[in-house]
Length: 476
Image (cartoon, rainbow, N blue to C red; front, side, top):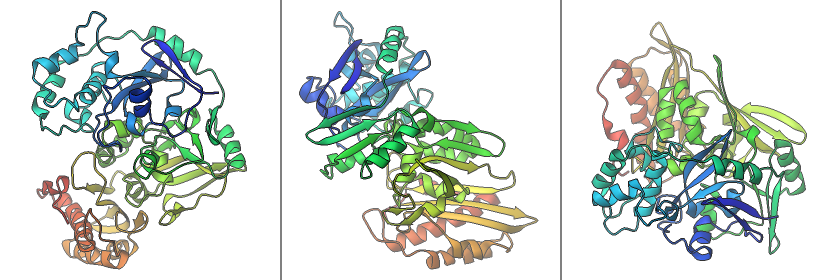
Protein backbone atom coordinates (compact mmCIF):
# COMPACT_ATOMS: atom_id res chain seq x y z
CA UNK A 1 0.00 0.00 0.00
CA UNK A 2 0.95 3.64 -0.15
CA UNK A 3 -0.41 7.12 0.25
CA UNK A 4 -3.08 8.58 -2.03
CA UNK A 5 -4.30 12.16 -1.87
CA UNK A 6 -6.04 14.72 -4.07
CA UNK A 7 -4.11 17.73 -5.35
CA UNK A 8 -5.89 20.24 -7.57
CA UNK A 9 -8.37 17.62 -8.72
CA UNK A 10 -5.77 14.97 -9.53
CA UNK A 11 -5.03 11.86 -7.46
CA UNK A 12 -1.41 11.65 -6.34
CA UNK A 13 -0.12 8.18 -5.39
CA UNK A 14 3.14 7.56 -3.54
CA UNK A 15 4.04 3.90 -3.20
CA UNK A 16 7.20 4.00 -1.09
CA UNK A 17 6.63 6.41 1.78
CA UNK A 18 9.06 7.17 4.59
CA UNK A 19 6.69 7.34 7.59
CA UNK A 20 8.31 10.52 8.92
CA UNK A 21 8.91 12.28 5.61
CA UNK A 22 7.28 15.69 5.91
CA UNK A 23 4.74 17.10 3.52
CA UNK A 24 6.89 20.23 3.24
CA UNK A 25 9.92 18.31 1.97
CA UNK A 26 7.82 16.30 -0.45
CA UNK A 27 6.25 19.45 -1.91
CA UNK A 28 9.52 21.27 -2.33
CA UNK A 29 11.92 18.52 -3.36
CA UNK A 30 9.72 15.97 -5.10
CA UNK A 31 6.91 18.07 -6.57
CA UNK A 32 8.66 21.38 -7.22
CA UNK A 33 6.03 23.33 -5.27
CA UNK A 34 8.46 25.76 -3.71
CA UNK A 35 5.87 28.36 -2.76
CA UNK A 36 5.55 26.48 0.54
CA UNK A 37 8.50 27.70 2.61
CA UNK A 38 10.50 26.28 5.50
CA UNK A 39 10.92 28.89 8.19
CA UNK A 40 11.15 27.20 11.57
CA UNK A 41 10.49 23.47 10.92
CA UNK A 42 8.54 23.29 14.18
CA UNK A 43 5.06 24.60 13.40
CA UNK A 44 5.64 28.03 14.86
CA UNK A 45 6.04 30.52 11.99
CA UNK A 46 3.42 29.42 9.43
CA UNK A 47 5.59 29.94 6.35
CA UNK A 48 4.76 26.36 5.33
CA UNK A 49 0.97 26.70 5.72
CA UNK A 50 -1.15 24.62 3.34
CA UNK A 51 -4.83 23.68 3.36
CA UNK A 52 -5.79 20.05 3.88
CA UNK A 53 -9.36 18.94 3.21
CA UNK A 54 -11.23 15.90 4.48
CA UNK A 55 -14.73 14.60 3.97
CA UNK A 56 -17.41 15.99 6.26
CA UNK A 57 -20.59 14.35 5.01
CA UNK A 58 -21.11 15.65 1.49
CA UNK A 59 -18.70 18.54 1.90
CA UNK A 60 -14.98 19.08 2.23
CA UNK A 61 -13.79 20.56 5.51
CA UNK A 62 -10.59 22.49 4.85
CA UNK A 63 -7.99 23.20 7.54
CA UNK A 64 -4.84 25.29 7.55
CA UNK A 65 -1.96 23.13 8.81
CA UNK A 66 1.82 23.33 9.04
CA UNK A 67 3.37 21.22 6.28
CA UNK A 68 6.72 21.18 8.11
CA UNK A 69 5.42 18.83 10.84
CA UNK A 70 2.79 16.96 8.83
CA UNK A 71 4.02 13.48 7.94
CA UNK A 72 3.11 12.24 4.46
CA UNK A 73 1.00 9.26 5.63
CA UNK A 74 -1.27 11.75 7.42
CA UNK A 75 -2.35 13.01 4.00
CA UNK A 76 -3.81 9.70 2.86
CA UNK A 77 -7.44 10.01 1.75
CA UNK A 78 -7.39 13.79 1.94
CA UNK A 79 -7.24 16.77 -0.40
CA UNK A 80 -4.39 19.25 -0.53
CA UNK A 81 -4.22 22.88 -1.58
CA UNK A 82 -0.95 24.81 -1.82
CA UNK A 83 -0.34 28.43 -2.75
CA UNK A 84 0.22 27.28 -6.35
CA UNK A 85 -3.37 25.99 -6.32
CA UNK A 86 -4.81 29.51 -6.01
CA UNK A 87 -3.73 31.13 -9.24
CA UNK A 88 -6.26 31.37 -12.07
CA UNK A 89 -5.74 29.51 -15.36
CA UNK A 90 -5.22 32.77 -17.27
CA UNK A 91 -2.43 33.82 -14.92
CA UNK A 92 -4.46 36.35 -12.95
CA UNK A 93 -4.30 36.42 -9.19
CA UNK A 94 -6.76 34.95 -6.77
CA UNK A 95 -8.87 37.82 -5.23
CA UNK A 96 -7.03 37.52 -1.91
CA UNK A 97 -3.64 37.55 -3.62
CA UNK A 98 -4.69 40.59 -5.64
CA UNK A 99 -5.76 42.38 -2.46
CA UNK A 100 -2.48 41.49 -0.75
CA UNK A 101 -0.57 42.94 -3.71
CA UNK A 102 -2.69 46.09 -3.87
CA UNK A 103 -2.25 46.70 -0.14
CA UNK A 104 1.51 46.27 -0.23
CA UNK A 105 1.12 43.36 2.17
CA UNK A 106 4.36 41.66 1.14
CA UNK A 107 7.81 42.94 2.06
CA UNK A 108 10.61 40.38 1.72
CA UNK A 109 7.90 37.94 0.58
CA UNK A 110 9.19 34.86 2.37
CA UNK A 111 6.23 34.52 4.73
CA UNK A 112 3.63 35.72 2.22
CA UNK A 113 2.52 32.33 0.81
CA UNK A 114 1.77 31.12 4.35
CA UNK A 115 -0.28 34.20 5.14
CA UNK A 116 -2.14 33.82 1.87
CA UNK A 117 -3.02 30.22 2.65
CA UNK A 118 -4.24 31.02 6.18
CA UNK A 119 -6.36 33.92 4.93
CA UNK A 120 -7.62 31.98 1.92
CA UNK A 121 -8.84 29.33 4.33
CA UNK A 122 -10.84 32.00 6.13
CA UNK A 123 -12.32 33.17 2.83
CA UNK A 124 -13.53 29.70 1.82
CA UNK A 125 -15.01 28.77 5.21
CA UNK A 126 -12.18 26.56 6.45
CA UNK A 127 -11.84 25.59 10.10
CA UNK A 128 -11.51 28.80 12.13
CA UNK A 129 -13.07 31.00 9.45
CA UNK A 130 -15.32 32.61 12.06
CA UNK A 131 -12.35 33.89 14.06
CA UNK A 132 -11.09 37.48 13.79
CA UNK A 133 -8.42 37.94 11.15
CA UNK A 134 -5.76 38.51 13.82
CA UNK A 135 -6.55 35.12 15.37
CA UNK A 136 -6.52 33.37 11.99
CA UNK A 137 -2.96 34.57 11.30
CA UNK A 138 -1.67 34.30 14.88
CA UNK A 139 0.27 31.21 13.76
CA UNK A 140 1.96 33.12 10.92
CA UNK A 141 5.09 35.14 11.62
CA UNK A 142 6.14 38.15 9.54
CA UNK A 143 9.78 38.88 10.25
CA UNK A 144 9.49 42.25 8.47
CA UNK A 145 6.71 43.34 10.89
CA UNK A 146 4.30 44.07 8.07
CA UNK A 147 1.15 42.99 9.88
CA UNK A 148 -0.91 46.13 9.23
CA UNK A 149 -1.29 45.67 5.46
CA UNK A 150 -1.75 41.90 5.92
CA UNK A 151 -4.57 42.42 8.40
CA UNK A 152 -6.13 44.98 6.08
CA UNK A 153 -6.07 42.55 3.15
CA UNK A 154 -7.66 39.89 5.31
CA UNK A 155 -10.44 42.25 6.36
CA UNK A 156 -11.07 43.55 2.86
CA UNK A 157 -11.33 40.18 1.11
CA UNK A 158 -14.77 38.73 1.54
CA UNK A 159 -16.02 35.13 1.30
CA UNK A 160 -14.98 33.23 -1.80
CA UNK A 161 -17.20 30.56 -3.30
CA UNK A 162 -15.72 27.15 -4.04
CA UNK A 163 -17.26 24.15 -5.77
CA UNK A 164 -15.94 20.99 -4.09
CA UNK A 165 -18.47 18.55 -5.61
CA UNK A 166 -15.84 16.76 -7.70
CA UNK A 167 -13.46 16.66 -4.75
CA UNK A 168 -16.16 15.06 -2.58
CA UNK A 169 -16.62 12.23 -5.08
CA UNK A 170 -12.87 11.71 -5.41
CA UNK A 171 -12.35 11.69 -1.64
CA UNK A 172 -15.13 9.15 -1.15
CA UNK A 173 -13.24 6.83 -3.47
CA UNK A 174 -9.93 7.49 -1.74
CA UNK A 175 -11.31 6.91 1.75
CA UNK A 176 -12.99 3.58 1.06
CA UNK A 177 -10.09 1.44 2.30
CA UNK A 178 -9.60 -0.22 5.68
CA UNK A 179 -6.31 0.06 7.55
CA UNK A 180 -3.66 1.61 5.33
CA UNK A 181 -0.04 0.66 5.89
CA UNK A 182 3.41 1.00 4.43
CA UNK A 183 6.99 -0.15 4.83
CA UNK A 184 10.04 1.92 4.01
CA UNK A 185 13.49 0.36 4.48
CA UNK A 186 12.20 -1.74 7.36
CA UNK A 187 10.31 1.09 9.06
CA UNK A 188 6.55 0.56 9.22
CA UNK A 189 3.47 2.75 9.46
CA UNK A 190 -0.23 2.03 9.87
CA UNK A 191 -3.40 4.13 9.66
CA UNK A 192 -6.31 2.15 11.18
CA UNK A 193 -9.94 3.19 10.82
CA UNK A 194 -11.42 1.71 14.01
CA UNK A 195 -10.57 1.57 17.67
CA UNK A 196 -10.63 -2.22 17.53
CA UNK A 197 -8.06 -2.21 14.73
CA UNK A 198 -5.88 0.18 16.72
CA UNK A 199 -6.07 -2.09 19.77
CA UNK A 200 -4.93 -5.07 17.69
CA UNK A 201 -2.06 -3.13 16.16
CA UNK A 202 -0.82 -2.11 19.61
CA UNK A 203 -0.68 -5.77 20.62
CA UNK A 204 1.14 -6.72 17.42
CA UNK A 205 3.52 -3.74 17.61
CA UNK A 206 3.99 -2.88 21.30
CA UNK A 207 6.76 -0.39 20.57
CA UNK A 208 4.80 1.61 18.02
CA UNK A 209 4.47 5.37 18.40
CA UNK A 210 0.92 6.66 18.10
CA UNK A 211 0.59 9.93 16.20
CA UNK A 212 -2.53 12.10 16.09
CA UNK A 213 -1.63 15.63 14.94
CA UNK A 214 2.19 15.33 15.12
CA UNK A 215 2.43 18.78 16.70
CA UNK A 216 4.88 17.29 19.21
CA UNK A 217 6.20 14.16 17.48
CA UNK A 218 6.89 16.20 14.36
CA UNK A 219 9.53 18.15 16.28
CA UNK A 220 11.17 14.94 17.46
CA UNK A 221 12.00 14.35 13.81
CA UNK A 222 12.63 17.86 12.45
CA UNK A 223 14.50 19.18 15.49
CA UNK A 224 15.54 16.10 17.45
CA UNK A 225 16.46 14.14 14.29
CA UNK A 226 14.98 11.02 15.86
CA UNK A 227 14.29 7.85 13.90
CA UNK A 228 10.97 6.21 14.71
CA UNK A 229 10.70 2.61 13.58
CA UNK A 230 6.92 2.05 13.74
CA UNK A 231 4.17 4.64 13.69
CA UNK A 232 0.41 4.33 13.99
CA UNK A 233 -1.53 7.32 12.68
CA UNK A 234 -4.86 7.94 14.43
CA UNK A 235 -6.60 10.63 12.38
CA UNK A 236 -8.79 8.16 10.42
CA UNK A 237 -10.50 6.70 13.51
CA UNK A 238 -13.87 8.44 13.55
CA UNK A 239 -14.94 6.95 16.89
CA UNK A 240 -12.13 8.88 18.59
CA UNK A 241 -13.49 12.18 17.27
CA UNK A 242 -16.85 12.34 19.02
CA UNK A 243 -18.09 15.35 21.02
CA UNK A 244 -20.95 14.66 23.45
CA UNK A 245 -22.50 17.39 25.59
CA UNK A 246 -25.26 17.12 28.18
CA UNK A 247 -26.34 18.74 31.42
CA UNK A 248 -23.71 16.81 33.38
CA UNK A 249 -20.69 17.65 31.30
CA UNK A 250 -18.69 17.11 28.15
CA UNK A 251 -17.05 14.02 26.68
CA UNK A 252 -14.36 14.53 24.08
CA UNK A 253 -12.89 11.72 22.03
CA UNK A 254 -9.11 11.59 22.20
CA UNK A 255 -8.88 12.42 18.49
CA UNK A 256 -10.90 15.62 18.69
CA UNK A 257 -8.77 18.47 17.43
CA UNK A 258 -8.55 21.53 19.64
CA UNK A 259 -10.06 23.68 16.90
CA UNK A 260 -13.14 21.44 16.93
CA UNK A 261 -13.29 21.26 20.73
CA UNK A 262 -13.04 25.03 21.17
CA UNK A 263 -16.74 25.89 21.07
CA UNK A 264 -17.82 23.04 23.35
CA UNK A 265 -15.11 23.83 25.91
CA UNK A 266 -16.06 27.51 25.84
CA UNK A 267 -19.66 26.54 26.58
CA UNK A 268 -18.45 24.50 29.53
CA UNK A 269 -16.66 27.60 30.84
CA UNK A 270 -15.42 30.75 29.03
CA UNK A 271 -11.94 30.43 30.54
CA UNK A 272 -11.56 27.02 28.89
CA UNK A 273 -12.42 28.61 25.56
CA UNK A 274 -9.88 31.37 26.07
CA UNK A 275 -7.22 28.83 27.04
CA UNK A 276 -7.81 26.84 23.86
CA UNK A 277 -7.66 30.01 21.75
CA UNK A 278 -4.06 30.40 22.92
CA UNK A 279 -2.91 26.82 22.31
CA UNK A 280 -0.51 27.43 19.44
CA UNK A 281 -1.71 29.11 16.28
CA UNK A 282 -4.77 28.00 14.32
CA UNK A 283 -2.62 25.59 12.31
CA UNK A 284 -1.56 23.83 15.52
CA UNK A 285 -5.13 23.69 16.86
CA UNK A 286 -6.28 22.32 13.49
CA UNK A 287 -3.92 19.36 13.95
CA UNK A 288 -3.28 18.89 17.67
CA UNK A 289 -5.78 16.78 19.62
CA UNK A 290 -7.15 16.84 23.14
CA UNK A 291 -6.07 13.24 23.69
CA UNK A 292 -2.63 13.78 22.23
CA UNK A 293 -2.03 16.73 24.55
CA UNK A 294 -2.88 14.45 27.47
CA UNK A 295 -1.23 11.25 26.29
CA UNK A 296 2.27 12.64 25.82
CA UNK A 297 2.36 13.75 29.46
CA UNK A 298 4.13 17.08 28.92
CA UNK A 299 4.50 19.07 32.17
CA UNK A 300 3.74 22.25 30.20
CA UNK A 301 0.82 20.99 28.13
CA UNK A 302 -1.92 23.63 28.34
CA UNK A 303 -4.94 21.35 28.53
CA UNK A 304 -4.27 18.97 31.46
CA UNK A 305 -4.00 21.50 34.34
CA UNK A 306 -7.37 23.00 33.46
CA UNK A 307 -9.02 19.61 33.01
CA UNK A 308 -7.58 18.33 36.29
CA UNK A 309 -8.98 21.33 38.13
CA UNK A 310 -12.36 20.65 36.54
CA UNK A 311 -12.30 17.07 37.86
CA UNK A 312 -11.87 15.34 34.50
CA UNK A 313 -11.74 11.57 34.09
CA UNK A 314 -9.76 9.68 31.46
CA UNK A 315 -10.91 6.51 29.69
CA UNK A 316 -8.20 4.20 28.39
CA UNK A 317 -8.91 1.30 26.05
CA UNK A 318 -7.12 -1.86 24.98
CA UNK A 319 -8.02 -5.18 23.42
CA UNK A 320 -8.96 -6.35 26.92
CA UNK A 321 -11.45 -3.57 27.54
CA UNK A 322 -11.69 -0.12 29.07
CA UNK A 323 -10.80 1.50 32.37
CA UNK A 324 -11.53 4.99 33.65
CA UNK A 325 -9.27 6.91 36.04
CA UNK A 326 -9.09 10.46 37.38
CA UNK A 327 -7.04 12.46 34.90
CA UNK A 328 -4.63 13.55 37.64
CA UNK A 329 -3.77 9.88 38.31
CA UNK A 330 -2.60 9.39 34.73
CA UNK A 331 0.54 11.51 35.23
CA UNK A 332 3.02 9.50 37.32
CA UNK A 333 6.36 11.23 36.75
CA UNK A 334 8.24 13.06 34.04
CA UNK A 335 7.85 11.03 30.86
CA UNK A 336 5.88 8.32 32.71
CA UNK A 337 2.12 7.87 32.48
CA UNK A 338 -0.33 5.26 33.73
CA UNK A 339 -0.87 3.66 30.34
CA UNK A 340 -0.45 -0.10 30.27
CA UNK A 341 1.00 -1.96 27.27
CA UNK A 342 -1.60 -2.09 24.51
CA UNK A 343 -3.66 0.81 25.91
CA UNK A 344 -4.54 4.05 24.24
CA UNK A 345 -6.38 7.16 25.43
CA UNK A 346 -9.95 6.89 24.16
CA UNK A 347 -11.78 9.88 25.67
CA UNK A 348 -11.88 12.43 28.45
CA UNK A 349 -14.96 13.35 30.50
CA UNK A 350 -15.18 16.86 31.95
CA UNK A 351 -17.91 17.56 34.51
CA UNK A 352 -19.88 20.75 34.08
CA UNK A 353 -18.97 23.19 36.88
CA UNK A 354 -21.67 24.07 39.36
CA UNK A 355 -23.49 27.31 38.69
CA UNK A 356 -22.04 28.89 41.83
CA UNK A 357 -18.48 27.60 41.24
CA UNK A 358 -15.63 30.09 41.06
CA UNK A 359 -13.51 29.01 38.09
CA UNK A 360 -10.46 30.80 36.78
CA UNK A 361 -7.82 29.62 34.31
CA UNK A 362 -4.76 31.63 33.32
CA UNK A 363 -1.81 30.91 31.05
CA UNK A 364 1.40 32.91 31.30
CA UNK A 365 3.77 32.84 28.35
CA UNK A 366 6.52 35.00 26.93
CA UNK A 367 4.35 35.75 23.90
CA UNK A 368 0.59 36.06 24.10
CA UNK A 369 -0.07 34.06 20.93
CA UNK A 370 1.35 30.75 19.79
CA UNK A 371 3.66 30.11 22.72
CA UNK A 372 4.29 27.43 25.32
CA UNK A 373 3.28 28.10 28.91
CA UNK A 374 5.75 29.28 31.49
CA UNK A 375 3.01 28.71 34.10
CA UNK A 376 -0.58 27.64 33.62
CA UNK A 377 -2.89 27.82 36.63
CA UNK A 378 -6.43 26.49 36.98
CA UNK A 379 -8.74 27.08 39.95
CA UNK A 380 -12.15 25.58 40.72
CA UNK A 381 -13.66 26.63 44.04
CA UNK A 382 -17.04 26.01 45.65
CA UNK A 383 -18.23 28.81 47.93
CA UNK A 384 -21.27 28.81 50.23
CA UNK A 385 -22.26 31.63 52.59
CA UNK A 386 -18.86 33.25 52.21
CA UNK A 387 -16.93 30.08 53.03
CA UNK A 388 -14.82 28.03 50.62
CA UNK A 389 -16.27 24.55 50.90
CA UNK A 390 -13.96 22.82 48.39
CA UNK A 391 -11.04 23.64 46.13
CA UNK A 392 -9.40 21.98 43.16
CA UNK A 393 -6.24 23.74 41.99
CA UNK A 394 -3.76 22.51 39.39
CA UNK A 395 -0.71 23.97 37.70
CA UNK A 396 1.38 23.21 34.65
CA UNK A 397 5.01 24.26 34.39
CA UNK A 398 5.54 23.94 38.15
CA UNK A 399 6.59 20.28 38.44
CA UNK A 400 7.58 17.22 36.41
CA UNK A 401 3.91 16.65 35.60
CA UNK A 402 0.70 18.69 35.61
CA UNK A 403 -0.18 18.44 39.31
CA UNK A 404 -2.67 19.52 41.92
CA UNK A 405 -1.70 21.94 44.69
CA UNK A 406 -2.92 19.98 47.72
CA UNK A 407 -1.40 22.24 50.39
CA UNK A 408 -2.89 25.29 48.71
CA UNK A 409 -6.29 23.56 48.49
CA UNK A 410 -6.13 22.69 52.20
CA UNK A 411 -5.27 26.29 53.07
CA UNK A 412 -8.44 27.43 51.31
CA UNK A 413 -10.98 24.77 52.25
CA UNK A 414 -13.23 25.57 55.18
CA UNK A 415 -12.00 29.12 55.44
CA UNK A 416 -13.71 32.44 54.62
CA UNK A 417 -13.37 33.92 51.14
CA UNK A 418 -11.06 36.72 52.29
CA UNK A 419 -7.75 38.18 51.22
CA UNK A 420 -6.07 36.74 54.32
CA UNK A 421 -7.17 33.25 53.32
CA UNK A 422 -5.83 33.70 49.82
CA UNK A 423 -2.52 35.08 51.14
CA UNK A 424 -2.09 31.94 53.25
CA UNK A 425 -3.00 29.73 50.30
CA UNK A 426 -0.52 31.54 48.06
CA UNK A 427 2.22 30.94 50.61
CA UNK A 428 1.29 27.24 50.70
CA UNK A 429 2.23 26.90 47.03
CA UNK A 430 5.86 26.77 48.17
CA UNK A 431 4.99 23.52 49.93
CA UNK A 432 3.36 22.10 46.83
CA UNK A 433 6.03 22.95 44.27
CA UNK A 434 9.76 23.35 43.76
CA UNK A 435 9.85 24.30 40.06
CA UNK A 436 12.90 24.21 37.84
CA UNK A 437 14.63 27.20 36.29
CA UNK A 438 14.74 27.17 32.48
CA UNK A 439 14.58 29.55 29.53
CA UNK A 440 10.92 30.35 30.21
CA UNK A 441 11.42 31.47 33.78
CA UNK A 442 13.30 31.00 37.00
CA UNK A 443 12.06 28.85 39.86
CA UNK A 444 11.37 31.93 41.95
CA UNK A 445 9.54 33.62 39.12
CA UNK A 446 7.29 30.62 38.68
CA UNK A 447 6.44 30.52 42.39
CA UNK A 448 5.68 34.24 42.42
CA UNK A 449 3.65 33.96 39.22
CA UNK A 450 1.60 31.05 40.57
CA UNK A 451 0.81 33.00 43.73
CA UNK A 452 -0.15 36.04 41.67
CA UNK A 453 -2.58 33.97 39.61
CA UNK A 454 -4.31 32.81 42.77
CA UNK A 455 -4.56 36.38 44.06
CA UNK A 456 -5.79 37.48 40.64
CA UNK A 457 -8.77 35.17 41.12
CA UNK A 458 -9.57 36.83 44.44
CA UNK A 459 -9.31 40.34 42.98
CA UNK A 460 -11.45 39.35 40.03
CA UNK A 461 -14.24 38.11 42.32
CA UNK A 462 -14.10 41.42 44.18
CA UNK A 463 -14.71 43.23 40.90
CA UNK A 464 -11.28 44.86 40.99
CA UNK A 465 -9.59 45.90 37.79
CA UNK A 466 -7.10 43.17 36.97
CA UNK A 467 -3.81 43.83 35.22
CA UNK A 468 -3.48 42.61 31.65
CA UNK A 469 0.13 41.66 32.33
CA UNK A 470 -0.88 38.00 32.37
CA UNK A 471 -1.36 38.43 28.61
CA UNK A 472 2.17 39.74 28.07
CA UNK A 473 4.24 38.56 31.01
CA UNK A 474 7.54 40.04 32.00
CA UNK A 475 10.47 37.67 31.69
CA UNK A 476 11.12 35.68 34.84
